[in-house]
Image 1 (cartoon, each protein chain N blue to C red):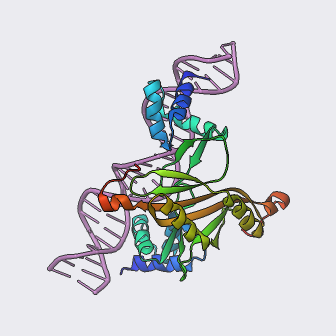
Image 2: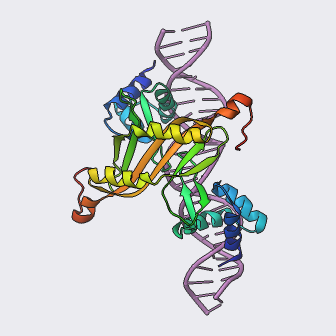
Image 3: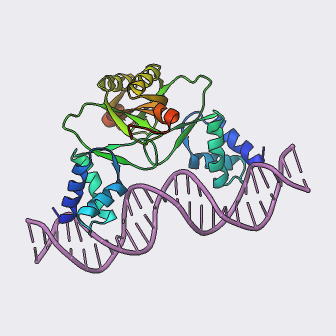
Length: 132
Length: 132
DNA sequence: CTAGGTGCAAAAGCTTTGCATCTAC
DNA sequence: GTAGATGCAAAGCTTTTGCACCTAG
């Protein structure tokens, strides 16, 4: 347990929303200037393994992460194309769906994800988005 | 309309399953040796725009593509972690779901995706997978 | 003739890794 | 003292792009 990791942990749990590895690097460095990019990239998979952080893939080249909440109910994401915000929505039926379609194929589900990409009407009409 | 593009089109429609840009490059070169990587990467977005090819993002760094079928019903994917195969499954309720959750947030849905990652029981038990 | 396509190689962007050094225990 | 963590820089991998050349119509 090193000082750098502590800074990373602290930065992670200060986050209330999704973040990228580079954003986490910045936040961690604000706490401990000696945190290096390599350490962030090496620590993130450990946090994911430990279920302290959840990896959220939204289909662009970059990985997103977020602090994991206590409950592990399946979550869907609504991703706003305009403000880049990611909304997490509980979607309990996903588990049932994954089980059903997988077993039809002779497979066992490991994980599932449901994502809706959307655009902001408010922004489109008034030029501002109160959500972002 | 150049010879290289024709080779790429031909290679695409010979495919019956998902493929990556690099795989398409190989297949296209088998038809016309002069096809370059740049041309494949420049042609793929055109094919996607024209709805001749569908882009399928399975959450890894690489993009997958597949020839687009006539019908445009929403599709879910089941991705086998063992054999890397991608199964396409019709999921008409996705559209309804996307509309519902988006409008709750004041957003208008653009697209949605539903993916199940699974593992192969057959492979795990007998060491072979008859599906791959 | 010329608008647009092509090939090559370099660059871009995120992530991983080799290696020598350092540090927590 | 030592197993494991760190920093730096280089490399990896897929995709994009600048530029000069070429070609279809």
